[in-house]
Length: 143
Image (cartoon, rainbow, N blue to C red; front, side, top):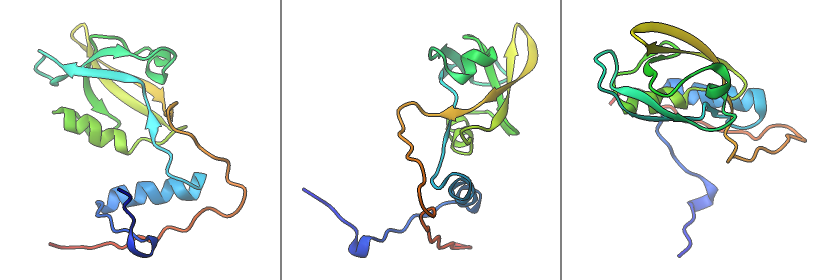
């Protein structure tokens, strides 16, 4: 069964910060450009953060930057990590090509490691040959 939107239009509700991230990507790249770190996460036994690096994808930005399995993730950029949802929310704001500091707990010491995000290798990006597409955002403030 095929579904379509009337008139090709859709409505999405995003926090203003998220809409600004998408708008900024469209201005810079002509499309949203999510950043990718190549980290696998799991639950940690540590008290500083419940999230531990369980693996790294080969040749990923995080592997190249020196993130290691067993590192406990404390912050992504300036966002504190208290749950897996925090990691997913912070990841939304990453942009391919930008550098983000990851604060990790390793061997009892807090370390900040800068990682340059790359485009997700599973995402295909087309070169912009004309003007970038126009996106109309409707922002609803309040309840």
